[in-house]
Length: 508
Ligand SMILES: [Cu+2]
Image (cartoon, rainbow, N blue to C red):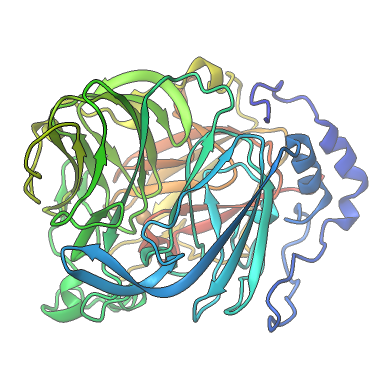
């Protein structure tokens, strides 16, 4: 496992090694797909290349544990959402969510993605501090995997926790292309009887002709106020106090837990008194979920895969891309796990069953949803993963800009281009300030690193942070994973509109 307590600031062996190899830093990216045209190499110079020697050296330092071989097939298939609702969509292995990928920290994951889709795709390992050329971002870290081609992602998985995989191409992840990625801790400090992976999603693909691309087209075209058919996906007045106002851009026909609608929810069976670890993932495209388990309090143990000081709460809110692990002690009976689509007047449901009782109503609203709610800024990192206190060497300030009217979401008013670079240097402590000048909240995600939330020491380690309208969120991280890394809003429509950019390690 990677030692996250390494001495900050000390030049690492790879910094030194890399210097002599800098000239080789513009090497070709891994090619794939028989019919792919040769890649243009007109990239900004002076940066570590995703397949450069610094990246290879960082990977060597992570070690190479047992190889776990996994096959993942992306294909267009029918999906049964329950309650007689079947859609045709794109998914992994014809299942929703895709079958869980499970490894142990230190393992080498060798996952072959077979693309049976009509479009090029990729796999991104959300939250994992992996080698850069396996991060799955076409145009930056690899070529997209062409239809009919396959690509093997091979990397050491350094940290235990709850992660997930999804494509990093267009609006594909607002179809059914997602699966949990669970990394077991070989020295798991928590004791529990059962584990329940809970994946939340908002769903529109294949419903009355909707596709994510058509929705994006409508959002860009400003026809959101029209009524009927596709236009009804564009809500007016999705409001949430918790999110500081406008809650989302899209009214989805369905909200799902583990691929099922609330009318025909998925269930989880345990015994009364069992300690259950829930691993909750928000795989949605444009929906924050407020989650509570009726009749239970939850003890938050992890945020975005990394441990936090245990904190008891009644409910949690998850922006898109966020994960929380919680422990509950199961009561006796049948209990609703409700995921309220925050501000959208709808909810998703799963059921915990430890005894007899009727399935809760689809729209059940446990009182815990309105009880104590712990937000990420109230959590503290567990001592084992707290980022050591250090003065930042560099501060990157990113203004979140844009709005609904012209659908021009961006950083600093500049729509995304894969050639953008916000420079950092390996070994630096980097502070990033996300200044939200828009009238909407954004869940901002950094690839390849787990930052500390907040400018004061001891903030929870996360890779995705909710930035409310008018708010500035500060995060600190150690630049210890060379490469080119995306920073973007995890609202799939905001990201596609342009709220993405690239953080680049300067070549040594
Ligand atoms: Cu956004």
